[in-house]
Length: 409
Ligand SMILES: *Cc1c(COP(=O)(O)O)cnc(C)c1O
Image 1 (cartoon, rainbow, N blue to C red):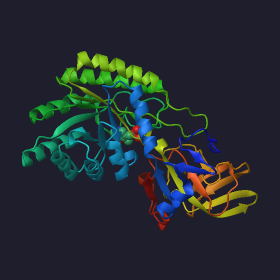
Image 2 (tube, rainbow, N blue to C red):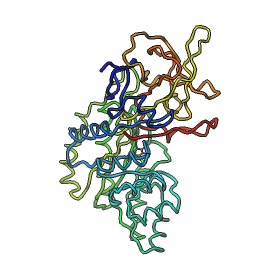
Image 3 (tube, helix red, strand yellow):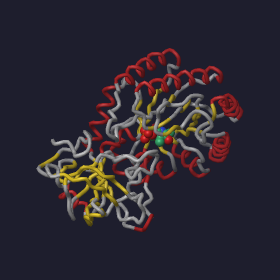
Image 4 (cartoon, rainbow, N blue to C red):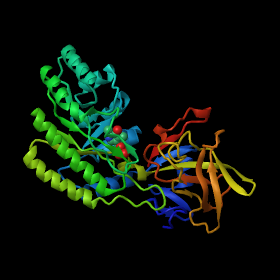
């Protein structure tokens, strides 16, 4: 295939002038969906990604999918057949995870501020709760008393280290996530008083990391921290969730994550765990890495305008559907996501264009002065790397335009 106009990205095949998804040319897919804009996620890409990851990691590592990256029910069902467990972050995500058919024993629930209702749901479902505060421990004890059910509890630890060079840091220093490592002994003592068991620890320290060495270091430190905490508190670790943070390349100059050193390190940890914590399941939980590259966002050119020499493709899609591509979801300096004109994949005639949406704000920018095939009204613009943190991470109500559709192909 020809590389898309911008970047090396995309496993999506090209047929004639059109990008295809699951073998279906884009205009046909758009007709089948019924209207634009939409997200399309490709089953084959999800399969390939998980298979490649499995090939790089030791077989003893359990692979969990963190569904907040993409909670579309059909996609979660597909992923449930590929991975060993699901991680949820709300009561609604828990319902979706249970609907997928995943064994509740392999579902875990992390996130600060869990409500009493969410905790009661979790206990009724028999899933593992990663407790983020002393309050959650007390509430789980109360629910156990009221229902006679045994809550399944692990402690989420706010570690005393950071995941270096991470897009978003979620551990180290003061954080709303987890229980500070130095307070874990106290939490374990309280669990003991309440006659509640602790199954292990969850140590998730960051997201979107492309440096294998940083991930290796974080996993080593997480392992050492869990060992120390287990020894101090006489915990027989059954589950050790080492987090994730595996990133995907979005911008020029970024390279796909090299999995080899991560796999080697995990093999070492698996070997050590055989001695140190023989009953422990070692888990990595990933969102973006599993689904991010398997999805595209598709919108249609409504208008082509030239303003003082600069070409604007005004589309029916924008930041209300795809906040991340507009640069307003965690980016410090705005950069373009890889994009293409999905209906002119072979076109030789290029021009510099800005792709914008219909919202009345200059933030509504999907591509800023990018070199793309010359397009006109009716053409389909494609934004790659859109399978994670897309629809559900965007302010769809903003300006009251139609909501985005999602299909799994
Ligand atoms: C967000 C989150 C994930 C997924 O992070 P990715 O960067 O998408 O892999 C995993 N675990 C927890 C606890 C999270 O909050």
